Length: 274
Image (cartoon, rainbow, N blue to C red; front, side, top):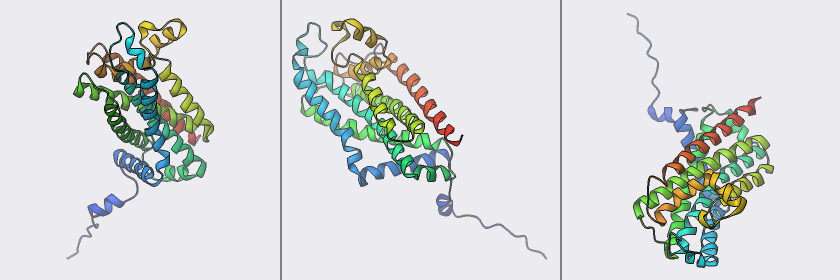
């Protein structure tokens, strides 16, 4: 009688510890590494929280008289500027992933990540998930400060939901753009370009005043700037209430721009092997 050799089965716990993994598992581990970095080096994340808070306070205080413009959609200046500050914070949460990637590239740690048996897409999806987690923290903190300063959404549930969707969308756009630039330059030369482009994209909109009172070239640029519609999506719950008319252009802009940004990031990541 001969015995048939049965290959030993790998316990589920050992399989979880085995190198490599699925796209989602690898992405979650990369995102978790980034979240731990916030706790270890909070200075890399604090500016993404403090800057939008500073903007909300500075703009709503300096331009409080903007509410006296005939037909202005709210009687609270903080209601106009708080969504802008949240969008700016969300954008810099995404750009921060580009900064972190540049640091990993300069220190050589990113080469070690690439050598790991993980799907290529995890190096894009992981930072993207991390940027979403950072946005939730940023928006939660800034919203609390905004409410203390007097912000009162017209529609609390849908208004906050629209703000969150806009924030996640902007973080996705900024993360893809920042990662792509990091893979192109591979050093801190990319940092200034990341910040400058996102900053200009948001402020060449109706960031400071409604389109109805804007004139000249800035009005023309703002009308055709897709970030105008994302900002409108974020703002509507703080002004006259959420409508589909002000929602779908922002959603479409997010889908198109984030898809292009993610394609740019993946294409430049793939070119690292060339």
